[in-house]
Amino acid sequence: MHPPTRDLPAGTVLSPEVADALSAGRPVVALESTLLAHGLPRPENRAAADDVEGAVRAGGAVPATIAVLDGVPHVGLTAAEVDRVCADPDLAKLGVRDLSVASALGLSGATTVSSTALLAAAAGIGVFATGGLGGVHRQAVDTFDESADLTALSRTSLVVVCAGVKSILDVPATLERLESLSVTVVGYRTTTFPGFYVADSGSTLDWSVDDAAAAARVFAARRELAPGAVVVANPLPLDEQLDPDLHDRVIAGALAAAEEAGVRGKDVTPFVLDHLHRASEGATLAVNVRLVLRNAELAGRIAAELAEVTR
Image (tube, rainbow, N blue to C red; front, side, top):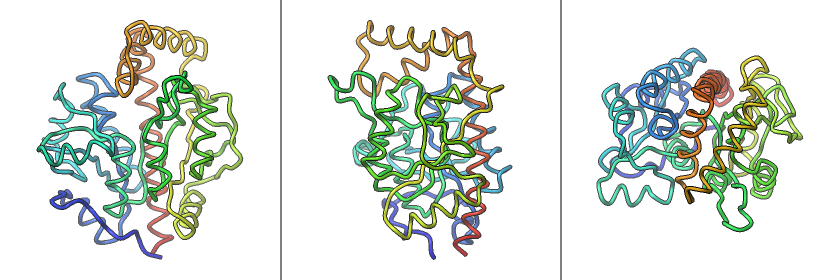
């Protein structure tokens, strides 16, 4: 079994380390840049960038942070390029639909889950680590607000390690949509779907895997059957999660603040995350970083196992 055929946009830059690893069949893990540019506050985001890449390495893989710089997709960033992503307050947020605009107009932006997944799979990268997926927003029945992450994962073949979906979303509706889109979802050592900042979202899963090797085998089988992602939902340990009472309180306050401010669409998530950080006095930030580090390390281990499966 061989990795997917590479079909990267013309001019895409692969960092030397990532290019060497891919050509040699060594494990690589994709990382999104929206987490750095829009999900974590400055200057904490810059230290987190190094820590997340370090967690991938600890798991046994090469990290490939993805972004678009001056219209050019980059798969794997230099330290100076990470500095740029973390420091620029005007960096655009680029989903799949935005990549062509950024490319044609020479713009820079951080990639979301959907666009990171697209570029990673095109590069032949089989594993992607993130914090939480996008999904169906609350009140979506009126707003039709649903993340492009879901449809992107339905047609992109890779493993996505996450801590569930962001707590501000409608979790049951998101799981229903993932089922309708035939995205495979497994819990990591659990059949409880995690709620991002908390270990239990209140929803359950049909399937779980006990180790990284099993996750790699599930993806290898999925890739043989049909396009589409395997989502590995990796909950925080109970002693590392956000206090559930604090979680419910700050989420309710953040959503109310977004509604009062009239925030809509792709601006909701960064607005709410910033509100949560301030309202929880930094507690949500600490949890966010912890869960991303855990996901990155697990993704590294899955990538290492996948490299063995596909040799």
